Image (cartoon, rainbow, N blue to C red; front, side, top):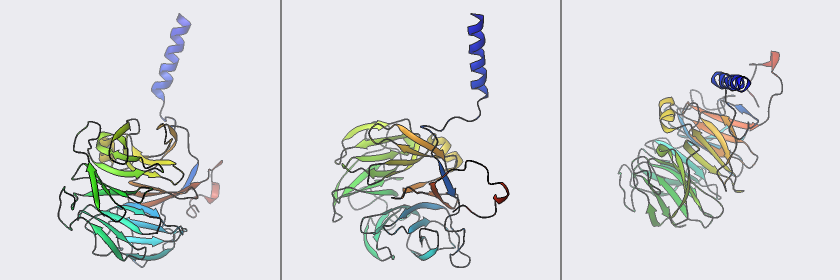
Length: 326
């Protein structure tokens, strides 16, 4: 009994003194460029990012950065290496938020300041818009601070609507209102800040119910299927064409708000079960994963993080700090 008691005391001491906990699902071995688009600096003189709300890439690998700063256009486009290509959007948006790029390389955004969803060409020409500029509402023609867009395999699309409302809105391929679901609350099918929406290859809809610290899962018509409550306050969801699920998340909503999106985690999730396959630390508000396996994070710290596969087996020694990572 004395031996058992001593063993238990030893384990208790070790657990009490543990300072760093394992990465959920195992460590993902990536390196990072913490100032993509700004190191090296190829933007026009005096330009810098404000708070970066979202980031996405097109079929050519070009990187689109949607940010809230006054010193550069709201939408800034780079090549895959971070060289400035073009920019647009000055004076158009109330408050940049969500960004997705469809199969036609059309650029879709949510403006949660002016309550609109907009579709542009990749050169910045406005094609279509939804919502009434500057007017908050909850009917078929209006939004109240929408957050994200997701495209279904059938061509329909969904909008999470968002900060002011607590619903998901579904539209047809040609942009006509079809239906919506959700209200403020904590029950299944209810939301408190639906902050992100994504659709898998089968048409299943995943909604980050951020303030409720869960992801809710629905069929294409809004029927509740199940929920995951073990992933924290998820900021953003990304599902690849191969149904690989990635999230940027925080331990809980209070920590997320208090730390202003610092202290977050990138997680790779099994789509079928919700099991965490791997994790690593990163601040962040938005996540985008490329076909090559690079992970781009839009961070309210004013950064775009480019994570790419790679790991240091040893330190950098005398080379440390001389230049940014590739």
